[in-house]
Structures are given as structure tokens and as C-alpha cells.
Image (cartoon, rainbow, N blue to C red; front, side):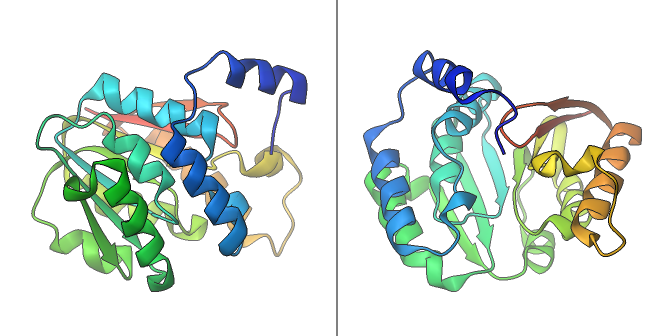
Length: 213
């Protein structure tokens, strides 16, 4: 959901860094070949993720929810030399398109793909992460967060996507709306968690930044 007028959204995008050609191609192929293409990160938010990664300069990144790989490439742009991205997605059918664009991006040797349940995979990873990006099953956000924070370094940043959920977080909650309820509880948990400093940004569908104390 766009919370700003389309004309202002366009102005903001037009006055931010251009979308790299490889990501333009990935976005087009996603819309042509993949179900639910609106799930892709997209130009403006991709540039936000890229900028955050460049400011943080992480050595190790954990991404929960790869989809077709757009956000992983954006995050990889900010890696320290010889840094690594571990990205996890449950959909094995997306593996080949991810790998195709990872390799074309020039970061292919730095991006490690994992296919399966993130809650099973994360505990098996031996690395400690400087940056975590959560963008997968919304009802499991708190579980992802709790699993990931155990693998972070002091000062690490955890980014959570879609935390405004098309504005539903401020609308009357339907009795059967399990996803919005989960996000409401998750947002409160991040705000109250003494282990992190938390800032919710109104970028696209909402991004929360948590800095591990």
C-alpha cells in the first residue's frame, strides 16, 4: 500500500538513486513468471535497503524470505569485502531465478541460498550476523525475530518489513484476521523489548529498525 499520493511517491523515487539495470530485469521477470509479483521489494525500498546496508557495512547478513532475490542483491551492495549473505526461502521453485540473478549481479559468490523452514535453518547457522532482514510469513515474525536475535552481534540491526500491513494495524481488528493480530503483537513486542532500540519507519508498507544493544 502507498500511504502518500502517487505524484509524491513518484517525486521521491525520481530523486533517489536509480534502480540498477539488473534489478529492473529481475523485477520484470518476476512480474512475468512468478505468482504474486507484488511481493517483490521494488525500486525505492530496494534503494533504502541498499543504503542501510552501505551505512552499516555488515560482514554477515541474514535474510529471512528471499522471494526472487531482489532484496538480497540490494543488501549485498553494502557488504564488507568478503562479506556473506545467508538468505532463506521455503519455496524451492524460486531457487533457479534467485541464483540466475545473484550470479549476474556480481555478488553470486557472496550469497548463500537456503531452502526450507527458516526456524529449522537459523539455529544451524554458525555465523553471527550484523544485519538481519525479515520479510517472510507474517504470522511467524516473532518466532523469526527470536531465532535471529540469538545469532546477532552487539550493535546489529534487524529490519522487519510490512509492519504497517496496508494500514490494517490502525483499523478495527477482525476476529478472523490472524495476520494483523500477529503483526500488532509483534510491533508491540519490538517496542517493549529491552534488548533493542526500535524505530518504525513509514517506508512503503512499514519498516522497523531494531538495533541490538
